[in-house]
Length: 117
Length: 113
Image (cartoon, helix red, strand yellow):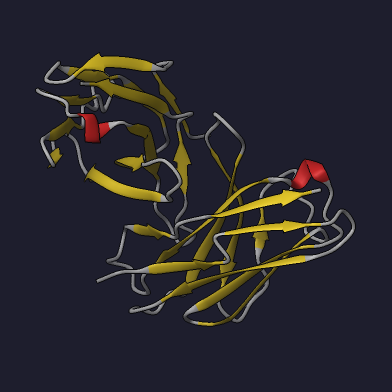
């Protein structure tokens, strides 16, 4: 199998606080994980590519100091939304690709609904 | 750069109707093409994929053919069910060392009994 689990599934936080979202590959190793953001009725937008043991690569327009990504092991990547504001409220989804050049599919987590009040 | 264009939704059909959701793409090289489905309140699930021209991906009665000449990957199903109600995303990957997906905006499908 290829299961990716995100935690939490939903979270409500106060403006100004930080929130950490975990993405785990449960039954495979993932050298690379991806973080997406989905606004209501819009597509997923790639925020950053997370590589195990190195710094994440952020897409243009994404603030790396606001969205901290850590990929400390082959099965876990975390996204921390720092000093969250209501405009950060969104659906965040991670995906993970199995280690190895022959693996071309990305497996998605169930997503995390963040609401900042 | 890469881009994916999907037909605008929402699409509302009656059960057993024929479904087509159009998808065209722009990409460098030879991308892989995907359809993902997102059921209410859930994350994305891969529905089907095709990795080279003329390949047909199929799953759960859905089909899509990779048409390089028209840069298209239209999703079809001959007879939809209420349980097919979801958002469908067309996506592509151009591979490389930093694999990542470019998504279309998604098409909301509602199937009524």
